[in-house]
Length: 266
Ligand SMILES: N[C@@H](CCC(=O)N[C@@H](CS)C(=O)NCC(=O)O)C(=O)O
Image 1 (cartoon, rainbow, N blue to C red):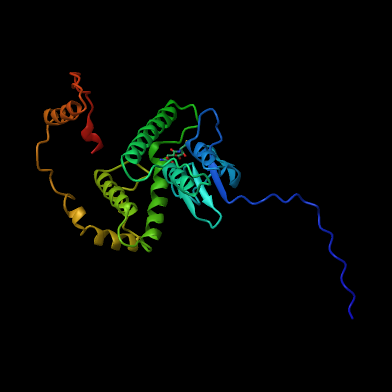
Image 2: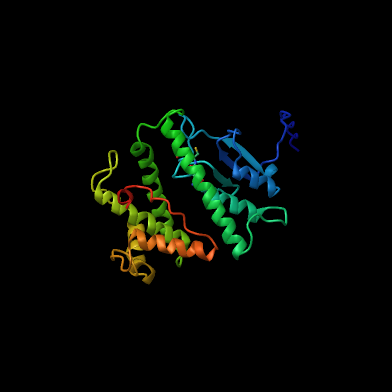
Protein backbone atom coordinates (compact mmCIF):
# COMPACT_ATOMS: atom_id res chain seq x y z
CA UNK A 1 0.00 0.00 0.00
CA UNK A 2 1.30 3.38 -0.97
CA UNK A 3 2.23 5.68 1.85
CA UNK A 4 -0.35 8.42 2.44
CA UNK A 5 1.00 11.77 1.28
CA UNK A 6 1.57 14.24 4.11
CA UNK A 7 -1.13 16.86 4.13
CA UNK A 8 -0.04 20.08 2.48
CA UNK A 9 0.41 22.85 4.98
CA UNK A 10 -2.32 25.42 4.57
CA UNK A 11 -1.85 29.00 5.56
CA UNK A 12 -4.25 30.09 8.25
CA UNK A 13 -6.24 32.72 6.47
CA UNK A 14 -9.32 34.34 7.85
CA UNK A 15 -12.18 33.28 5.64
CA UNK A 16 -14.60 36.11 5.23
CA UNK A 17 -18.07 35.25 4.06
CA UNK A 18 -18.59 36.19 0.42
CA UNK A 19 -21.17 38.89 0.12
CA UNK A 20 -24.04 38.27 -2.23
CA UNK A 21 -23.91 41.68 -3.92
CA UNK A 22 -21.31 44.25 -4.89
CA UNK A 23 -22.26 47.86 -4.89
CA UNK A 24 -20.00 50.09 -6.96
CA UNK A 25 -20.58 53.61 -5.73
CA UNK A 26 -18.80 56.85 -4.98
CA UNK A 27 -17.96 56.64 -1.29
CA UNK A 28 -18.49 60.31 -0.64
CA UNK A 29 -20.43 60.30 2.56
CA UNK A 30 -20.73 64.05 2.66
CA UNK A 31 -24.20 63.46 1.28
CA UNK A 32 -26.80 60.77 1.86
CA UNK A 33 -26.95 58.01 -0.72
CA UNK A 34 -30.43 56.78 -1.51
CA UNK A 35 -29.09 53.33 -2.37
CA UNK A 36 -27.30 53.01 0.99
CA UNK A 37 -30.40 54.11 2.86
CA UNK A 38 -32.54 51.55 1.04
CA UNK A 39 -29.95 48.77 1.54
CA UNK A 40 -29.98 49.47 5.25
CA UNK A 41 -33.75 49.77 5.53
CA UNK A 42 -34.09 46.48 3.65
CA UNK A 43 -31.77 44.69 6.10
CA UNK A 44 -29.29 43.89 3.34
CA UNK A 45 -26.33 45.98 4.50
CA UNK A 46 -24.22 43.00 5.52
CA UNK A 47 -24.79 41.25 2.22
CA UNK A 48 -23.16 44.03 0.25
CA UNK A 49 -19.53 44.44 -0.70
CA UNK A 50 -19.05 48.19 -1.05
CA UNK A 51 -16.75 49.05 -3.94
CA UNK A 52 -15.54 52.65 -4.21
CA UNK A 53 -15.62 54.12 -7.69
CA UNK A 54 -14.77 57.67 -8.67
CA UNK A 55 -16.14 57.78 -12.21
CA UNK A 56 -14.26 60.95 -13.16
CA UNK A 57 -10.86 59.76 -11.96
CA UNK A 58 -8.36 57.77 -13.99
CA UNK A 59 -8.21 54.13 -13.06
CA UNK A 60 -11.75 53.79 -11.89
CA UNK A 61 -14.11 52.31 -14.41
CA UNK A 62 -17.24 50.25 -14.38
CA UNK A 63 -17.68 50.56 -18.16
CA UNK A 64 -17.06 46.84 -18.56
CA UNK A 65 -20.14 45.96 -16.56
CA UNK A 66 -22.19 49.08 -17.11
CA UNK A 67 -22.09 50.58 -20.59
CA UNK A 68 -23.03 53.94 -19.09
CA UNK A 69 -20.01 53.91 -16.75
CA UNK A 70 -22.05 55.40 -13.95
CA UNK A 71 -22.47 54.77 -10.29
CA UNK A 72 -24.32 53.30 -8.56
CA UNK A 73 -23.97 49.91 -10.23
CA UNK A 74 -25.04 46.74 -8.45
CA UNK A 75 -23.64 43.33 -9.32
CA UNK A 76 -25.37 40.20 -8.06
CA UNK A 77 -23.68 36.92 -7.24
CA UNK A 78 -24.80 35.37 -10.53
CA UNK A 79 -23.25 38.21 -12.50
CA UNK A 80 -26.44 40.05 -13.12
CA UNK A 81 -25.67 43.73 -13.20
CA UNK A 82 -28.27 46.34 -12.38
CA UNK A 83 -27.77 49.99 -13.08
CA UNK A 84 -29.80 53.13 -12.72
CA UNK A 85 -30.27 53.88 -9.05
CA UNK A 86 -34.04 53.53 -9.49
CA UNK A 87 -33.60 49.93 -10.67
CA UNK A 88 -31.21 49.18 -7.83
CA UNK A 89 -33.36 50.55 -5.04
CA UNK A 90 -36.47 48.79 -6.31
CA UNK A 91 -34.50 45.55 -6.46
CA UNK A 92 -33.17 45.97 -2.91
CA UNK A 93 -36.59 46.82 -1.58
CA UNK A 94 -38.12 43.76 -3.24
CA UNK A 95 -35.33 41.49 -2.03
CA UNK A 96 -35.33 43.05 1.45
CA UNK A 97 -35.61 41.03 4.62
CA UNK A 98 -38.06 43.30 6.32
CA UNK A 99 -41.77 43.22 5.73
CA UNK A 100 -42.04 46.99 5.60
CA UNK A 101 -41.45 48.00 1.98
CA UNK A 102 -40.41 51.40 0.71
CA UNK A 103 -42.32 50.88 -2.53
CA UNK A 104 -46.06 50.92 -1.90
CA UNK A 105 -48.23 48.60 -3.96
CA UNK A 106 -49.76 49.84 -7.23
CA UNK A 107 -52.15 52.63 -6.38
CA UNK A 108 -52.16 56.33 -5.40
CA UNK A 109 -49.53 55.95 -2.66
CA UNK A 110 -47.15 54.32 -5.14
CA UNK A 111 -47.68 56.89 -7.86
CA UNK A 112 -47.05 59.64 -5.35
CA UNK A 113 -43.90 57.95 -4.04
CA UNK A 114 -42.61 57.47 -7.63
CA UNK A 115 -43.37 61.08 -8.44
CA UNK A 116 -41.36 62.24 -5.44
CA UNK A 117 -38.57 59.85 -6.42
CA UNK A 118 -38.42 61.38 -9.91
CA UNK A 119 -38.55 64.89 -8.44
CA UNK A 120 -35.66 64.30 -6.04
CA UNK A 121 -33.55 62.32 -8.52
CA UNK A 122 -33.79 65.06 -11.10
CA UNK A 123 -32.71 67.63 -8.51
CA UNK A 124 -29.72 65.37 -7.79
CA UNK A 125 -28.84 64.95 -11.46
CA UNK A 126 -29.00 68.61 -12.34
CA UNK A 127 -26.94 69.42 -9.23
CA UNK A 128 -24.31 66.88 -10.39
CA UNK A 129 -24.25 68.60 -13.77
CA UNK A 130 -23.94 72.04 -12.19
CA UNK A 131 -21.05 70.81 -10.02
CA UNK A 132 -19.32 69.42 -13.13
CA UNK A 133 -19.77 72.71 -14.96
CA UNK A 134 -18.08 74.45 -12.04
CA UNK A 135 -15.04 72.34 -12.81
CA UNK A 136 -14.04 71.46 -9.26
CA UNK A 137 -13.72 67.83 -10.16
CA UNK A 138 -11.27 66.99 -12.96
CA UNK A 139 -13.36 67.76 -16.02
CA UNK A 140 -13.89 65.54 -18.97
CA UNK A 141 -12.50 67.19 -22.14
CA UNK A 142 -15.98 67.96 -23.45
CA UNK A 143 -19.49 66.74 -22.96
CA UNK A 144 -19.26 65.03 -26.37
CA UNK A 145 -16.04 63.12 -25.77
CA UNK A 146 -17.16 62.15 -22.25
CA UNK A 147 -20.67 61.04 -23.16
CA UNK A 148 -20.26 59.60 -26.65
CA UNK A 149 -18.45 56.40 -25.56
CA UNK A 150 -21.31 55.79 -23.11
CA UNK A 151 -23.80 56.04 -25.97
CA UNK A 152 -21.82 53.67 -28.19
CA UNK A 153 -21.41 51.10 -25.40
CA UNK A 154 -25.10 51.42 -24.54
CA UNK A 155 -26.04 50.82 -28.20
CA UNK A 156 -23.88 47.67 -28.21
CA UNK A 157 -25.67 46.53 -25.07
CA UNK A 158 -29.03 47.23 -26.75
CA UNK A 159 -27.91 45.04 -29.68
CA UNK A 160 -27.24 42.18 -27.25
CA UNK A 161 -30.49 42.80 -25.40
CA UNK A 162 -32.50 42.91 -28.63
CA UNK A 163 -31.57 39.28 -29.30
CA UNK A 164 -33.54 38.37 -26.17
CA UNK A 165 -36.40 40.83 -26.36
CA UNK A 166 -39.73 39.16 -25.64
CA UNK A 167 -43.15 40.71 -26.10
CA UNK A 168 -43.06 44.42 -25.42
CA UNK A 169 -42.10 46.00 -22.12
CA UNK A 170 -41.16 49.33 -20.57
CA UNK A 171 -37.51 48.72 -21.43
CA UNK A 172 -38.40 48.44 -25.12
CA UNK A 173 -40.60 51.52 -24.93
CA UNK A 174 -37.63 53.43 -23.48
CA UNK A 175 -35.30 52.00 -26.14
CA UNK A 176 -37.59 53.35 -28.88
CA UNK A 177 -37.58 56.71 -27.11
CA UNK A 178 -33.77 56.84 -26.88
CA UNK A 179 -33.03 55.64 -30.42
CA UNK A 180 -35.52 57.92 -32.08
CA UNK A 181 -34.12 60.92 -30.20
CA UNK A 182 -30.59 59.88 -31.11
CA UNK A 183 -31.61 59.68 -34.78
CA UNK A 184 -33.15 63.11 -34.54
CA UNK A 185 -30.11 64.76 -32.97
CA UNK A 186 -27.59 62.92 -35.16
CA UNK A 187 -29.64 64.07 -38.14
CA UNK A 188 -29.26 67.67 -36.99
CA UNK A 189 -25.57 67.05 -36.27
CA UNK A 190 -23.74 66.82 -32.97
CA UNK A 191 -20.06 67.55 -32.35
CA UNK A 192 -16.89 65.41 -32.61
CA UNK A 193 -16.21 62.69 -31.69
CA UNK A 194 -19.80 61.95 -32.69
CA UNK A 195 -19.40 61.00 -36.36
CA UNK A 196 -21.24 63.02 -38.96
CA UNK A 197 -24.45 61.32 -40.13
CA UNK A 198 -24.03 58.67 -37.43
CA UNK A 199 -26.36 55.73 -37.90
CA UNK A 200 -26.67 53.38 -34.90
CA UNK A 201 -28.08 50.65 -37.21
CA UNK A 202 -24.68 49.98 -38.76
CA UNK A 203 -23.29 46.74 -37.29
CA UNK A 204 -26.36 46.21 -35.12
CA UNK A 205 -28.65 43.93 -37.15
CA UNK A 206 -30.73 42.61 -34.24
CA UNK A 207 -31.52 46.02 -32.87
CA UNK A 208 -32.33 47.22 -36.37
CA UNK A 209 -34.67 44.28 -37.03
CA UNK A 210 -36.41 44.84 -33.70
CA UNK A 211 -36.67 48.59 -34.40
CA UNK A 212 -38.23 48.05 -37.82
CA UNK A 213 -40.82 45.72 -36.30
CA UNK A 214 -41.52 47.85 -33.24
CA UNK A 215 -42.13 50.90 -35.44
CA UNK A 216 -45.27 49.16 -36.68
CA UNK A 217 -46.84 49.05 -33.21
CA UNK A 218 -50.00 51.17 -33.04
CA UNK A 219 -48.54 52.87 -29.96
CA UNK A 220 -45.73 54.13 -32.18
CA UNK A 221 -47.60 54.84 -35.43
CA UNK A 222 -50.12 56.83 -33.37
CA UNK A 223 -47.64 59.71 -33.14
CA UNK A 224 -44.22 58.97 -34.59
CA UNK A 225 -43.27 61.46 -37.33
CA UNK A 226 -46.76 62.95 -37.34
CA UNK A 227 -47.45 66.59 -36.67
CA UNK A 228 -49.19 67.38 -33.45
CA UNK A 229 -52.85 68.16 -34.02
CA UNK A 230 -54.65 70.37 -31.50
CA UNK A 231 -54.20 73.60 -29.61
CA UNK A 232 -50.51 74.39 -29.10
CA UNK A 233 -50.06 77.82 -27.55
CA UNK A 234 -48.68 79.12 -24.24
CA UNK A 235 -52.15 80.47 -23.49
CA UNK A 236 -53.74 77.07 -23.95
CA UNK A 237 -51.11 75.50 -21.71
CA UNK A 238 -51.56 78.19 -19.06
CA UNK A 239 -55.31 77.66 -19.13
CA UNK A 240 -54.84 73.95 -18.63
CA UNK A 241 -52.50 74.57 -15.71
CA UNK A 242 -54.98 76.97 -14.22
CA UNK A 243 -57.68 74.32 -14.48
CA UNK A 244 -55.54 71.90 -12.57
CA UNK A 245 -54.81 74.51 -9.92
CA UNK A 246 -58.49 75.33 -9.71
CA UNK A 247 -59.25 71.69 -9.14
CA UNK A 248 -56.78 71.88 -6.26
CA UNK A 249 -58.59 74.90 -4.93
CA UNK A 250 -55.70 77.24 -5.90
CA UNK A 251 -55.37 80.24 -8.19
CA UNK A 252 -52.83 80.37 -11.00
CA UNK A 253 -49.95 82.78 -10.27
CA UNK A 254 -49.77 85.63 -12.75
CA UNK A 255 -45.99 85.34 -13.19
CA UNK A 256 -44.48 86.17 -16.59
CA UNK A 257 -43.44 82.97 -18.36
CA UNK A 258 -39.71 82.15 -18.19
CA UNK A 259 -37.98 82.98 -21.46
CA UNK A 260 -36.17 79.86 -22.61
CA UNK A 261 -35.34 78.79 -26.13
CA UNK A 262 -36.99 75.42 -25.70
CA UNK A 263 -37.03 74.50 -29.37
CA UNK A 264 -33.26 74.03 -29.14
CA UNK A 265 -33.90 70.91 -27.09
CA UNK A 266 -36.45 69.46 -29.48
N1 LIG B 1 -29.69 58.19 -13.51
C1 LIG B 1 -28.52 57.66 -12.86
C2 LIG B 1 -27.58 58.79 -12.53
C3 LIG B 1 -26.36 58.38 -11.77
C4 LIG B 1 -25.26 59.40 -11.90
O1 LIG B 1 -25.43 60.45 -12.53
N2 LIG B 1 -24.12 59.09 -11.33
C5 LIG B 1 -23.00 59.97 -11.44
C6 LIG B 1 -22.47 60.17 -10.06
S1 LIG B 1 -21.20 61.30 -10.04
C7 LIG B 1 -21.94 59.29 -12.31
O2 LIG B 1 -21.69 58.12 -12.20
N3 LIG B 1 -21.35 60.07 -13.21
C8 LIG B 1 -20.29 59.59 -14.01
C9 LIG B 1 -20.51 59.83 -15.45
O3 LIG B 1 -21.57 60.34 -15.85
O4 LIG B 1 -19.64 59.45 -16.19
C10 LIG B 1 -28.92 56.93 -11.59
O5 LIG B 1 -29.92 57.35 -10.98
O6 LIG B 1 -28.27 55.94 -11.25
